[in-house]
Image (tube, rainbow over all chains, first blue to last red; front, top):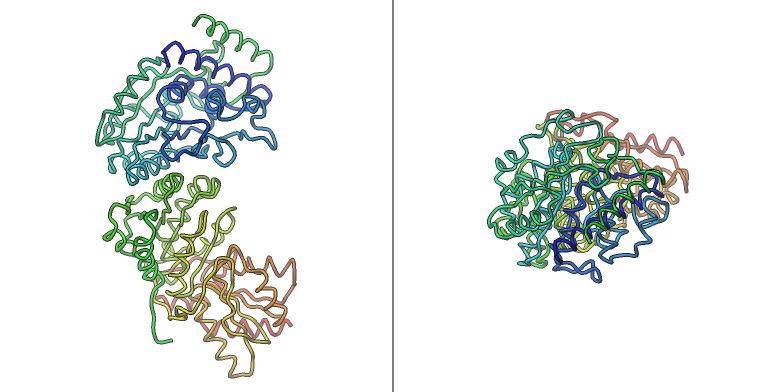
Length: 276
Length: 312
């Protein structure tokens, strides 16, 4: 898929994020929008997957460790054809498939249940270890939040991934700089992030998380690196693509009302049209 | 009952059987492989053994990922760290998605001994039992452990196996048949039933013998499958004896005694006495001295039986 087609996919994913959050009346737009280009690149270019066979043993795996960004994953899965797009409108509602946080038991295409922060990298490590044991060539991707890395388990897992030389694993850190209570640097400083991961013996690539071409290159480089895991420290803007949500901490965990959604969708449709 | 063996030793040997028979079985440990007895598996199947260092949360999360990719991980540490430190990883990454992880923990209960209260899990059965999808098993001896470990590998879904450090009397041979969800009546009696698990099964058999000398007929039931619980057998025995004593090396809150009280309370209210740790932590000491000190000796069981009989 071409760069411009991937941009269109990211744009559609952003529109779907906004659309599904309105009837849900709750959810996390900020960190979903910040990850839209990353997730679009993974699901429409990078990952070897087959929506007709969600449990295919040789598929690449994706763990959304920052599980509250479920809308971005659901939008990508629906766009990819894992389930009908109508399901998006049942997000967070009783008896429906799309839970507030990803649930592998209920949603086709979700490779791991998540939502409790700090656990996804460990799980991804386990999948990568299994791949090596089985001599399979699938890759494992895991998306972390920058607030999430305050969880100690992330660093236990970082140590283990390097120890076991998990070069079939690529982590992506959605470095949007904001968390629920405010700027990450004021809540719990995590900088210097790249140095920390380097010190844990990872291959570190710093990348603009909204530059699809750069993301593609980074994923390609990660595949070439042998003997160590790679992390993309992806600099992003929380709420990316919706002017009034960008860099606004208040949009971490509240859904837009119908009026706000209309404004957001207007902006996103214009962006989509500008892509030609 | 002269012969003794530790359930953890039986675990280590059972893993070797699984290592040979089932290529999907993998083992994880947290720097305690000599104590949990997973080290032998590690020596024989190094590519399928993962020492995760002293990081139990990551260990259980990694086990979840291995299971999600088709492996059958046995995750081992001391019971206190496996179920305590890593509780929420077990809850959200294993039980909630019903992943096929076997949490095989050793050094449960006060019979850990000298290491003291910080290392003696007395609440693990309660917290594991409260998790949907979790199977909770407590073996009474080595043979039962062996069968339990093999059964756990066959079972689809998370299992918690609670083992001890101490050598305990050999009770069973290969004719014994363990099954998940089944309790075993080891001795039929008519006056009172002792329902026990873990090392308290051997104590219960001794107490029953003492009481027989006084003309009291005691039923002894090994409830090694705490969850699922064999309600049918428990109700049948309770109906026959009309007095029940439960015995476990665990806090009396939330463990075997609670599980049985829940069933009897709803379906067949029966005079009951629970023997266990009386909502207290353990301490350092020699294992059998601690068991006496904390009310888990055979004399304590005899006394509990008399109390239960008096309630009839």
